[in-house]
Image 1 (cartoon, rainbow, N blue to C red):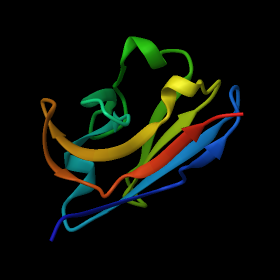
Image 2: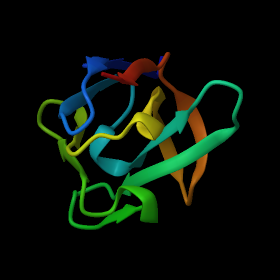
Image 3: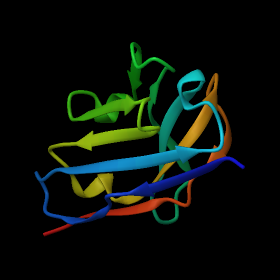
Image 4: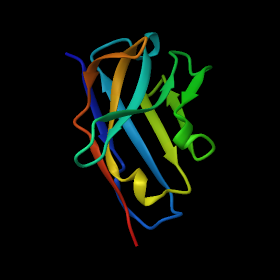
Length: 117
Protein backbone atom coordinates (compact mmCIF):
# COMPACT_ATOMS: atom_id res chain seq x y z
CA UNK A 1 0.00 0.00 0.00
CA UNK A 2 1.04 3.58 -0.52
CA UNK A 3 2.84 5.08 2.47
CA UNK A 4 4.34 8.51 2.96
CA UNK A 5 6.29 9.21 6.13
CA UNK A 6 7.56 12.69 6.94
CA UNK A 7 10.39 13.53 9.30
CA UNK A 8 12.68 16.41 10.17
CA UNK A 9 10.34 18.85 11.83
CA UNK A 10 11.09 20.56 15.10
CA UNK A 11 11.59 23.84 16.92
CA UNK A 12 13.85 26.39 15.30
CA UNK A 13 14.57 30.05 15.90
CA UNK A 14 13.55 32.71 13.38
CA UNK A 15 16.12 32.85 10.61
CA UNK A 16 17.06 29.23 11.12
CA UNK A 17 16.85 26.23 8.82
CA UNK A 18 15.30 22.79 8.74
CA UNK A 19 15.23 20.02 6.18
CA UNK A 20 12.11 17.92 5.95
CA UNK A 21 12.12 14.45 4.44
CA UNK A 22 9.30 12.27 3.14
CA UNK A 23 9.98 8.61 2.52
CA UNK A 24 7.64 7.00 0.03
CA UNK A 25 6.78 3.35 -0.52
CA UNK A 26 4.17 1.21 -2.21
CA UNK A 27 4.21 2.91 -5.60
CA UNK A 28 6.56 3.89 -8.41
CA UNK A 29 7.87 7.07 -6.80
CA UNK A 30 9.56 8.45 -9.89
CA UNK A 31 6.32 8.36 -11.87
CA UNK A 32 4.52 10.85 -9.68
CA UNK A 33 4.78 14.52 -8.94
CA UNK A 34 4.95 15.28 -5.24
CA UNK A 35 3.90 18.23 -3.13
CA UNK A 36 4.50 19.80 0.22
CA UNK A 37 1.39 21.27 1.84
CA UNK A 38 1.14 22.89 5.25
CA UNK A 39 -1.52 23.69 7.79
CA UNK A 40 -1.12 26.25 10.53
CA UNK A 41 -3.26 26.07 13.68
CA UNK A 42 -6.79 27.21 12.95
CA UNK A 43 -6.12 27.64 9.24
CA UNK A 44 -6.78 25.66 6.11
CA UNK A 45 -4.38 23.69 3.98
CA UNK A 46 -1.84 25.80 2.14
CA UNK A 47 0.12 24.53 -0.85
CA UNK A 48 3.86 25.13 -0.49
CA UNK A 49 5.72 23.47 -3.36
CA UNK A 50 5.62 20.88 -6.13
CA UNK A 51 8.20 18.82 -7.95
CA UNK A 52 7.65 16.68 -11.02
CA UNK A 53 8.58 13.03 -11.28
CA UNK A 54 12.15 13.40 -12.51
CA UNK A 55 12.86 16.44 -10.36
CA UNK A 56 13.46 18.68 -13.33
CA UNK A 57 10.60 21.08 -12.64
CA UNK A 58 9.80 22.73 -9.35
CA UNK A 59 7.13 25.20 -8.29
CA UNK A 60 6.76 27.33 -5.19
CA UNK A 61 4.17 29.43 -3.45
CA UNK A 62 5.17 33.09 -3.48
CA UNK A 63 5.59 33.18 0.29
CA UNK A 64 8.44 30.62 0.19
CA UNK A 65 10.20 31.55 -3.04
CA UNK A 66 13.89 32.10 -2.44
CA UNK A 67 13.75 30.51 1.01
CA UNK A 68 12.58 26.91 0.45
CA UNK A 69 13.92 24.32 -1.96
CA UNK A 70 12.11 21.13 -2.92
CA UNK A 71 14.07 18.17 -4.23
CA UNK A 72 13.81 14.42 -4.55
CA UNK A 73 16.00 11.35 -4.70
CA UNK A 74 14.15 8.80 -6.78
CA UNK A 75 16.68 6.07 -6.06
CA UNK A 76 15.89 6.44 -2.36
CA UNK A 77 12.18 7.14 -2.81
CA UNK A 78 12.54 10.31 -0.77
CA UNK A 79 11.22 13.84 -1.11
CA UNK A 80 12.88 16.78 0.64
CA UNK A 81 12.09 20.34 1.60
CA UNK A 82 15.02 22.52 2.59
CA UNK A 83 13.68 25.48 4.53
CA UNK A 84 15.94 28.47 5.16
CA UNK A 85 15.32 31.90 6.65
CA UNK A 86 12.38 30.55 8.57
CA UNK A 87 9.79 32.94 9.93
CA UNK A 88 7.26 32.50 12.76
CA UNK A 89 4.49 32.44 10.14
CA UNK A 90 6.06 29.30 8.67
CA UNK A 91 5.01 27.40 11.79
CA UNK A 92 2.64 24.64 10.72
CA UNK A 93 2.25 20.93 10.24
CA UNK A 94 3.95 20.08 6.96
CA UNK A 95 2.59 17.24 4.85
CA UNK A 96 3.96 15.54 1.80
CA UNK A 97 1.39 14.36 -0.69
CA UNK A 98 1.33 12.49 -3.95
CA UNK A 99 0.12 14.85 -6.62
CA UNK A 100 -1.81 14.53 -9.85
CA UNK A 101 -2.09 18.06 -11.19
CA UNK A 102 -2.29 19.24 -7.58
CA UNK A 103 -5.05 16.81 -6.74
CA UNK A 104 -3.56 14.97 -3.81
CA UNK A 105 -4.57 11.35 -3.34
CA UNK A 106 -2.17 10.17 -0.62
CA UNK A 107 -0.81 12.08 2.36
CA UNK A 108 1.73 11.51 5.05
CA UNK A 109 0.96 11.95 8.73
CA UNK A 110 2.66 15.34 8.85
CA UNK A 111 5.61 16.79 10.75
CA UNK A 112 5.38 19.82 13.03
CA UNK A 113 7.55 22.85 12.34
CA UNK A 114 7.62 25.55 15.00
CA UNK A 115 9.54 28.77 14.43
CA UNK A 116 9.92 30.67 17.66
CA UNK A 117 12.50 32.42 19.77
